[in-house]
Every structure is written in structure tokens, then in C-alpha cells.
Image (cartoon, rainbow, N blue to C red; front, side, top):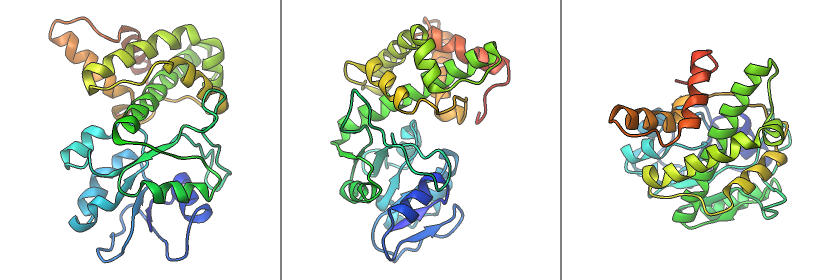
Length: 270
């Protein structure tokens, strides 16, 4: 296999889960056209367009995407949203070379990480070598799970960032789950409801319980407003579009929190 990106996830796939014959490439390295097998893309979202365009046409359906949502609009531009292997990553790697934390919770003891697509079984086997759980899902179910992960990132990061700034103390996702759930629950519902309109899909019932459980599992993970246009910006832009057309904002609480973070320069990745 080829692994593109030598950061926390790429190093895990290469060093801890690797096989003889694997190749580790940097973001700007050329992907060989004659190399058989899957290509794990473990880079930041902002690098994806260059990697896709630099990938030989005959190898594009071998690309495996491990990015946090929401990359679906980008993949649709390349007619790849329905064809490529997608991994919904719930395991966490705190620092490069550190032991990964599996996405196992008291609500989902079988783990939350999932995969769909051509190379799904290969992904599962690779992650299992690092003793990480990974479920094989049909496209529809994996997509719903990805929307759920997107909601978790958007809700917990914006609330943690804003409330941390107000209190003068950076917050972890565990602290958001423990002290601000009355803020978390309605925002999760707003985003979950809007996803039905915006994405024609939504997470199944029990969303808030699953996201709270996951936050407890990775309680020490810091909150920050990163990669805005891929995360909260996805929802915020839709709210602004609705308002500009004279409709009510479907996610007013989220918009208020995001606006606070924007006004106080707490956002990166615009």
C-alpha cells in the first residue's frame, strides 16, 4: 500500500500497521501509476484537491480518504463521492508515535470507527493490526455515521472554544460534555435536523447519547476551532444563505456561537 502523509495518522498506518512493501509519501510526492493496491490519504483536508489532481487517473479509485468530514462537496467535484473508500475515523492519536485511543465507548463497546468502499476490508485488517476496531458498513450507513462525526466536531469544538474563551481557561471535550451539555443537546438537534435538508441524510436516534459517550472516551482532547471551512463553516454558510433569502436560521444557537468565535479571532482555517 501507499500512505500519503507522515503525520499522526499516516505514521500510525505505516509504522504500527504497516506491511513489507508499503511506501510512505509526502504530500507533494508523486504517486506511482504502476504501484498496485490502495492509497491511504492521511493529510489535512486543504491538501486533498492537490493530491487528487496529482494522482494518475487510473489510480484515483484506489484513494482511501481518512479525513474528518465534511469533504463530500469536494469529492463530488471530482465525481468520487460515491465510488471511493471512506474511513470514518473515531480513534485518536494524541501525538505522532503515541499509542492510539480506540473509539470505543460505553454506548458503543464495539467501536465507532467505520469504513465503506472498494478497499474497506483492507482498511479494517490494517487497523486491526494496531488493535483498533473498525466496522464494515454500506455506503448509506457509513455516510450517516460521518454526518454524526461532523456534528460532534462542530458542536463540541465551537462550544468548548467559546466557553473556554469566556472563562479564560481552555476546555477539553470532556469538560464540555460534563459542564455544558444543556448547550450541546439543542445544538446537536439543530444540526441533525438541518442535515436532513442539506445532506438528505441524518444520524439515527440516540445521537446525543452517542456523542456524549464518545466525548467521555476522549475526554482529554482539547477543543479548538480548526479547519473552519470544512467543519463549522459548512453549517454556518448554510445559515447565512437561509438568512440572506429571508428564511429563519435553522441553527440559531450554532450561528451565535460561531459568530462569537469569529468576532474574537478564535477561528483558523477559513
